[in-house]
Image (cartoon, rainbow, N blue to C red; front, top):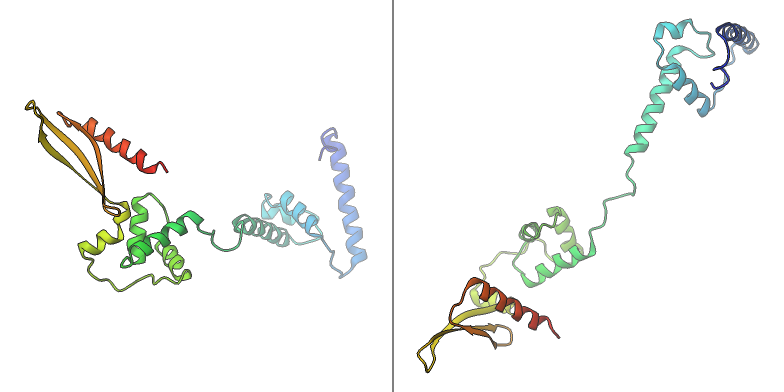
Length: 222
C-alpha cells in the first residue's frame, strides 16, 4: 500500500490491467482446479474487499466468487467476537477466602440460620455474594444450608453470643456533699466481669461515646 502512494493513476491503471491478465492466465492453467488460500490470505482479501458493493465485486477479476469473499469476512468477525467473549479463566471465580471463613463462622455461631439468612446478614455488611454461593460454601464444608428452623430462646441467644455482648447502664448515686453523680458500668456476659467506665455529673452523648471507646481499646489490648 505504501508503494502505491507515489504512483500516478496511469501507472496504477497499467498495473491493474497487467494483474487482471495474469489472473486470466492462471485461471486457464488451473482449469477446474480451485486456488488454495491460507487463513492470512483470506483475512487480507476479506478486509480489503468486504466494503465494496456486491455489484462492484462481480465486476472485479477474482480467483474466488464475491459471495466467498463476504463469507470469509463473516467468519473473520465471528471468530473475533468469539475470542473476545471467551472468559479469561474457565469456571466461576473462587470466592475470597475471608468471605468463606465469615460464612462458616456465622453458620457455626447461629446453628438455626439457613443460607438465605446468612446471605441477608452479609448484605447488611455490604458483602456482595449470591445466595447460591452461600449454599455451595456451606454444602462443601458439610454444613446443612437449610437447617430445621426452631425458636431460639433468650438464654440460648445469650450463650451463643456471650463473648460479644456487653451490657451497660448508669448507676445513680449522691456524694457526701449532696452532689448527684452518674456511674457508667459495663458487664461482660462471658466472664461476668464488671468494668467501671467513669463517673460524671452530666452524662452527655459525647462523654458516653468517649467512655465506650476507651473500654473497647482496653479490651483489645492483650
